[in-house]
Image (tube, rainbow, N blue to C red; front, side, top):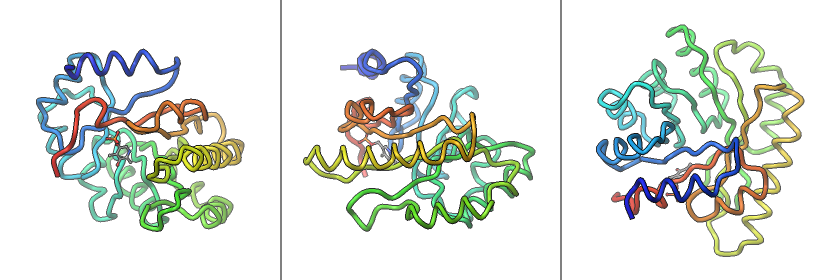
Length: 219
Ligand SMILES: *Cc1c(COP(=O)(O)O)cnc(C)c1O
């Protein structure tokens, strides 16, 4: 199947209003161009250098979403053009995004990455720390950061019940935070190639799909 055919299959399964982030990390710009020509506009990358290099040569109306762990000192590489930073997992990172967004006179959309999976290795906020952080009013002093929602990666397992538990958890967290941020807090980013049909059942508004569009990545 071509990238175009795979995209059409996936679009057909997404309810109206659900956004598709085509995760293009480790794939060359030509493959992204193919997806773009098929009509895809949002692309996800996990490394700032790679994203910046691709953004330089690809169409300017692409919306770039940073989905991987982002080091504070790398924010400035993507701040001039990035649409969304979907992996905000610390105060330091949020503060740096505010600083860089202000410098470029932009507002940057972010998602709060929450740790709900079993693996300790996964990144994201501990839910209690995040609750306390939000309650401290930290985001009120960040006018250039717009908190759009939450994101997580479910436990890597074949046990569907565990995946469902993780998605239920993040959905509850999304609903808990929504009244605190208001109408612009509208994004629940869950679901990857293997688990996005389940994520849709839990109200995902943004799936992040790589392998099912571009094939296996070469590391
Ligand atoms: C790589 C990655 C994806 C895409 O994973 P696939 O299994 O290839 O669909 C989605 N979300 C995040 C955070 C990723 O790092």
